[in-house]
Length: 341
Ligand code: ADP
Ligand code: MG
Image (cartoon, helix red, strand yellow):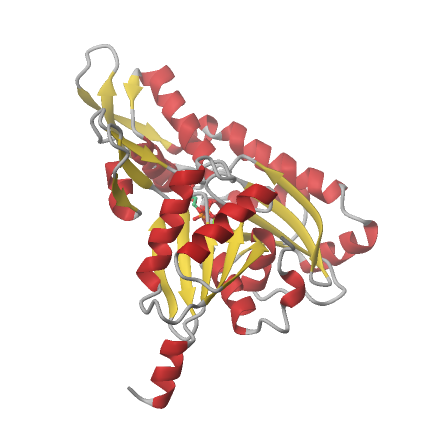
């Protein structure tokens, strides 16, 4: 091993985006080396962990009664302490290869986490072998990930739409000036699609199918060319598998409520913005990050409703972990953005 390779090996500090839908880990000098759904499958009778991450997600909606598939971060906070800890430890162990060298870790968490939840996250990271654990709030990491000048005395607005939450933050001088967080994100859209299919077609579909429908034909504004696809599920009356053609017009209607809630939260955040910073945001626009930002036409919808420049970040699913990585790589420079315990 060359000297530099050895050095990289010794200082494998890590940055982790602990999201409600996905967990990503960046290792210093190596890039993003883990990208897994935040999901754990547990056998009910003896609480044995059957799978964590992608493999557990495959089981969603397909398990028999004996296995429970849990998303411990689902609502933007820790839903299930014990399972959350198991998941965090498992992901960290996959990347912390050498137990003798204890890495530093920066974990990005939804800004709504409580003091005791911060404790759980820290403990889990320490148990997994990390020596020094710092936390950072999601919108701050997202802002750094898209390269916004967070340290300067200008206001920047970031909207991060994840699975369980939407966080809207105005950042200036390394701090979050204003933070509006709602527990509505991509999951809520999936839920409304499940309800819509049941109500309108007597078709029971799983969460995975609902997410696929959202991604393939979901939208927030009328489309020049409306789309359609086949939805598969179980007929609630006959109890047999059934396939139905659905189109983007009806799915837009189905998800209208959560999409509207996100739009309203953005408007509210803008109203709450101090006038000096409003001017900056008017000039510089708003950045959209998180997987939910990929919903077709959501950027256009926000542009129409706010009359502000709205920019979809490049690779919105990795902004947060990349921003956390920026802090890790320049810890001294960015110390101010870390959360106090
Ligand atoms: P979190 O930070 O909460 O883990 P992510 O930023 O990873 O969330 O985003 C996950 C959400 O993004 C999920 O609800 C997923 O369905 C949604 N998503 C991913 N790709 C798309 C897409 N192309 N269109 C709409 N939603 C998407
Ligand atoms: Mg996120």
